[in-house]
Image (cartoon, rainbow, N blue to C red; front, side, top):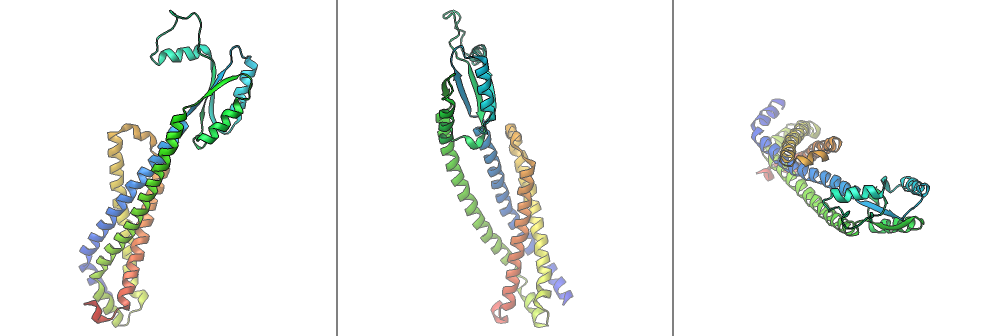
Length: 290
């Protein structure tokens, strides 16, 4: 029985070869989509973390009150940084942004001092900013609070839409991957149907018959995942070479989790599909195999 099994396994290698390539191709799609999801999430956090709130101060506000307000803002969980921008610093920034100096027209600095701070990504939404504005406006040295309202509104809408699109794409691709990999494995096992039935007819147990095929499925799934990982890495390095700025988003931990997920998906799906196919042919009558 073992010799028969080994001989048939050697004959079916081309079938396994195409099975490995088929599974690897589908895992490549999953890996590339996963990479886009990872980078999309990091880009979202980056843009959210770049939203700045400017708390404008009244003229001649006491330094002690300013320091107290800075400490208060820094103590809040929504602030990732807080900086006191004096009138002179505001003027320098205004000129560095390409604006002309007003010394020929005005003999005073019209720009107010402010406390600028960035919001943590999880607090960038309209309701939270409304509450923050209401809270800080109660301080007597605060004259006005500004933040990019349109940016916040548009960012939340875009993130929500992109999130739904990604969820839909991942769900659809996941279903297609399961169906296509299952069909690919079934086609690979089709050439072994007579071997499976022959081993059963000579008295081999189901466990003895399915064991070599299950082990082969685990190896094939692992090899498919390795091929997919290599191709995804080549894709990532190519994109980073084309757009060097994307290198800043690289997260080795998330990439390792993604690649581990590809290995698990490749092994689990090929194992389950192979075992189901073997069980199917074991239950079939000999005449139904033709």
